Every structure is written in C-alpha cells, then in structure tokens.
Image 1 (cartoon, rainbow, N blue to C red):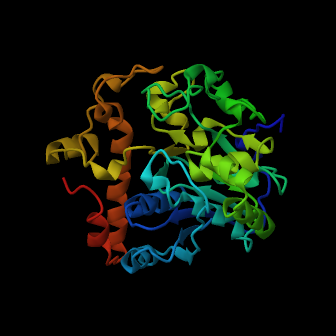
Image 2: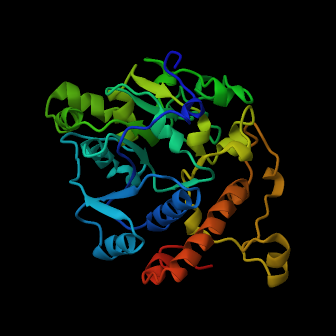
Length: 355
C-alpha cells in the first residue's frame, strides 16, 4: 500500500479474512429488484466464493422478499436510519440511503463489501476481500465529479479538472491509482462499492451523529446531498483508501474518461442515473440472434468510440452499449430462473420495461 491507495490485483494470492460477504440494500420499494437479481446472477456467473446478502427495511413488500429468497438469497431486515434535522437531497430516491450505514452492523462477518443494486459484474473481483485494511479504514473508488452534463445541483467545484480520476492515464489508472486525500475534491468517494470491516461500535457512532439534535451536527448533515456517500466520506476522512476505477466503473466513464477507460478491464459496472431495466432495447430477429449470439439489437451510434466528454447528444445512444450488456445478463438470469423452477419471474418482469 502506498499512501491512501492500493491495487487489489496485487493481493489476489493473499488470504482473505475468514468470513466474508457481499451486502446489497433493497429498501422501501422493489424497483431495484431486477438489478439485484442480475447482480446475484453475475456474481455466480463469475464464480465469486462469497454470498450476497440483501438488507431490506420492514416496509419492503413481502412479494419482493419472497422473490429474493426464491432466488436463493439471504434476506436480513434492518431498521431505517433517519436524521432528526433538515436534510437536502439532490433526488428523492436517496431518502432511504442513510440506512446503508447498517452494513457496519453485520459483525458476524469479518469483512464485507457493500455493493449497489444497480451494479453488474463483468469479471470476478473476489480479490477485494484480500486487501489489507485497518479496522478504521474502508476502500472505495473516487466519486467522478466531472459533471460534463452540467447538472444544476452539482457544486461549483465539480469539474473535470478537480475529479480524482482525471490525473490517471492508461494502465497506470489500475496499477497506481491516485491516492485519496483528507481534504478537497480528492477526499470524495463513491459509496456504490465500499470494502469495510463491520463494527457495532462504529455503527453506534454513526447513529449518534445522524440522529443528533445538536445544531452543529445538524448543520453538518444539511450540507450533504448524497446521504450515505457524504456520510462515509465524512466519517472516514483521511482514512479511506482509493482503489482502481475497474471496481466501480460508472457507465459515464465510457465517454467521460477516455484517459483510461477500456471495456475489457471493467470488473464491475455501475448503472448510475437512468436504470437499464426501465427501457428494453429492440430485440434481434432470429437471423440476427443466430449471427450475433445476442438477444437484443444495440446501436452504439456515434458513441462507439467517443471519448473524453463528447456530450450533448442523445443520452440513450450514449449508454446503449452498457445497457445492452445488462439486458443480455438479464436474459441469462431469466434462463437460470426457468431451469431452477423459479416462481417469481412474472413479478420481476413486471418491474422492467416489457418492450
């Protein structure tokens, strides 16, 4: 480890802690259920040794819980974490994500990897569990703050020049990731994937902060726009370790970070913003399917080789390739369901665009 960065690929042959797991959250609504099932399918497809645990809160519909358990996933109920004071969020969908801090309460495991339900593996990445972490450290990737689409909610310092990924180039972005810093924009992590050591003591500290009625604590929390992400960055300031982009490759990297991005290196793709299961691509004809081996027709359009933030064109075309990857894995998920006698396929299908 050098500074506050490391490359997990260097630790593939190292032993992992005795008991490890992936943990994903499905909170108040079942809308991410298709994503979580595809995540589970790709973990199995790429032969992860570790189980996926789904944390839910008590308000999640029973049908969603049965659909998860029917797919062979362990479901754990966690209690919601809600701030006492005023909060400011950039999107309503983030209102429940404070509860992701409950992952620190999974202390029957020695090491867990928090992973979002809008992620999908492209390769095995079990080496994440092997990396050396002190009990008070976590590992994550930078938050990409390029803001090339000029989102109005973004702070003024969210620019390409300030993004933690911008100094990286080519293979060195994997082999020598830029270190995280205790201050400035290089202190911002993306909480979509976080490697951590569970600790009930730390969880209590988090509850004390988030539920505090002290004016200083409430003012601090009011500044946060991404609940879990800003919480983790604050709690682990100066103590989180930067890992390579390949473990949390947000889909916009494909056309925002041509300084290092390649499809072949992606371990784990993160479908931020619009979710692929909300728009089904056009299906191939039987002849096209035989020729391509693909169920869906994907037109990459002008974005086949566009790099370095060439934006301003249709968003659907920008993400056509990566969304197409998701739909092909969804077909694999459904095929596995059919072979295994899964009885919740229609419920899951109802949460996707039927085309």
